[in-house]
Amino acid sequence: MNWSYWLGRIFFRGLFAICFRWRVYGADHVPRKGGVILASNHASYLDPPLVGAGLPRDLHYLARESLFRFPVMGALLRSWNSVPVDRSGGGAAGLRMILDRLLEGGGIILFPEGTRTVDGQLQPARSGIGLTVVKSTAPVVPVRVLGTFEAYGRRHKIPRFRRVSVVYGRPLAFETLRAEAQVCSKARLKEIYQEIADEIMAAIARLEPGAE
Image (spheres, rainbow, N blue to C red):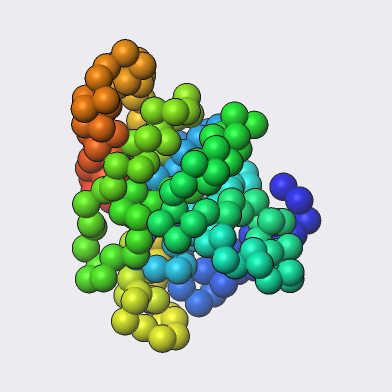
């Protein structure tokens, strides 16, 4: 954890504690080291720092590629382990960088829904996260953020001080589907991507504060 990330983590932990009365559940479910995918629902710009601040390890984040064009912003994002991706969060270069970070033992936050919810409800998962899971060997930890839509959802121009929580679930294993993906047809492969994405989203939906 470099000094910039460390300072950012302290800042956001203080912000969430003082302004949003945050609660963290199940952080011990996340491996302290080694590659891991944290798959979270997405309701607000608050979600990435909330998921990251709840853990003692540093994580890697996806950030819009255009943001890296600004020298100061780009340097800050890189110091916070951000991965530049195109607007859709995909692309071969972005996927390669994500997989490289996982192989190097990094943890990375992904949002199966692809974008922030418009109504506060969980949205269907896109197949992209299934592709990432199949191409990697990292465990997948489902994560649910609560209260961030009310605090700073799409309809809010400025944040409101509402209680927020982050719940980390037990790691999911996809060894069987990963093995099948190595030998199946292209049509079945697409089904596997979506099947994994749907399973992750279902696991996220089951997470509740304090539940084991």
